[in-house]
Length: 520
Image (tube, rainbow, N blue to C red; front, side, top):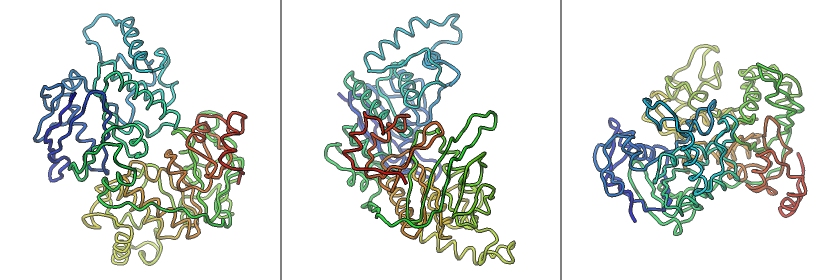
């Protein structure tokens, strides 16, 4: 039974066409995946469906009735709920209070919590949800918060649920739990539209897939009829090469942390506790972990932004505890920051100006160390734009107008032109599409082959297992021993990410079946 019809929806922002004549249908009890590159129009289309944008043309029908344009209230009344990628929960309120927030009239003189508890209990029972409604959101895990966001939508009687990148920050066990919940909800008649860049997960959970490219619908296929490679080709419009990670003989140490501790500024509690890490030339070490467990602080220490309280910290076998960011750059340390927009570029500066930021004062782009040689700088920028396929109208345009993938290419070009000895890659492909992901991964592997040591911090376990030679896991500010990637699986990594141990009897058999392992 068709419950949702999107018919020839078009939407433009000035000269930019976000959606062009997109049509699709959703059946009751169906999980439909919406895929596409960054800027393909996925989120715009869903925002139109949820009433946050108004389409320029076309119409949407839910349960056979036309939805009014740009009315979130109408969408909610029609049973459409949306869970955004970034949670919108009040951490200082309980689960119950978050779920009820905004569902009662401001003129109501009392809050019927008893009826709310009963309704939530019924939802949890029918949808295989297990949530203590009296807990504060601040005390919940990331996976539990995701469940609360879904519960909020179901409490408002959602029959169609839109999920935007729902697994972006979940452990494998939490992803498995989410998918079990979605399958249970599916059996109860709930329909789901899911946006994700994780193709393996889409293949595991959806029944049908719609692919958008440059605002247009290019494919609608049954999930069972395609594989990962075919999906990637549909998304990008051409075959996407799979980078090959060759095992290389490691060289000299490029990064060494031994018993490193970092205090919180407001207390004596550690942000990083007894961190040990050894990275060598021609080696990639991956750092896994759920967001907020110390990865950001570790990256800040290596980048020179934060200074450690105790322990040994060496880069290229030199004491790096007091080195400035500029001194680290001279040591040929390349940094790919977690937030490419705020920390990776100066948005109002031009593309060519951003491309010279890592080597301030150096020849040939500078005269006497302080005057810009504009012609030389632009000539080199032109070479880098071509080599790294930075797609821009021209090199004089503000860098902030580039797409996320092209901003990342700019950062890679700026760093890798200096032939770095150490590469710190922090969430390097977060939010990127398949084509950009393949390009970034190839650059990291090329850097390794060229003699660099690469520290890859990522929440994408497939990425870590594809690129890393060894993987360590951060949990609560502590870093596990290093495991060769060959002995690991997403399941085993998930155990470590949740604070478990792989050396216990419960998991010894899992490791034994993979092979013997050793620490670096």
